[in-house]
Image 1 (tube, rainbow, N blue to C red):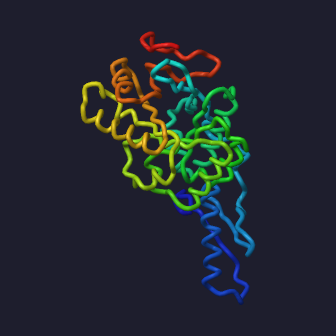
Image 2: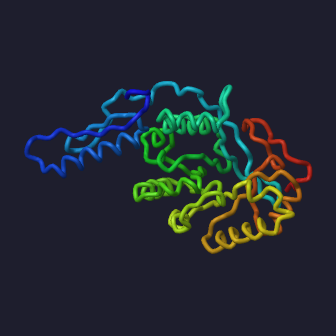
Image 3: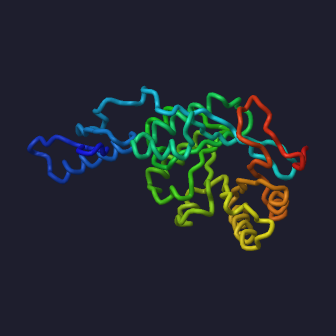
Length: 287
């Protein structure tokens, strides 16, 4: 490419007999295989199936190898820690910048898979473990190879804004994750513009309210109304609501009054290694 751009390419070879539309169709299948394999790749369709033909980078180190930290998910009624969300940290770079760079370089699947491996390596297997993954990444071999076959106790979080990429293939991938024992969470609920029908189709087990809905909720009737609506959605669909970004006792108490039972935030525990107890605010009730 002339200016350092990256691209995905799919191709097929014509035998002189095949219908041209079928030939183009095979090339198109190869193209999407290249994209789902992590982008910036070339894939070939030989008539039976598509495969990547450029050298794989799956075994190479990912620049900015992620280190996992864990933020507790707490029962707001008792203070009991029910699980943890795995978050990635990088040497000399913020996580937002690291994942944005990976997206520009076409290595998002590699980096997300590395983050999942790091999170699983530090997990004790006790309580829930929530892992973040993009919908497109769910279809890649990199992520599938990073996840264990038995996903009991694991929650896969997808962001609400990602639902614009929701396809039949994604639906099948989510069904497979559930069949293997995983739960599905919608992350950053309340900041996207996705079709509500897609959220219903996914049937989330957990709905995680974005911190923008939590900050100052104790003094904002509009935010309280939005969270009350989310609670009604959860009650009608059998899902559970998790409030993210709780920083004050007033926010926690307001959320509890609205019926929210699960929360995350610095008030409840800062991200850190699992072998160290989370720093919990003294005002949080304990069992």
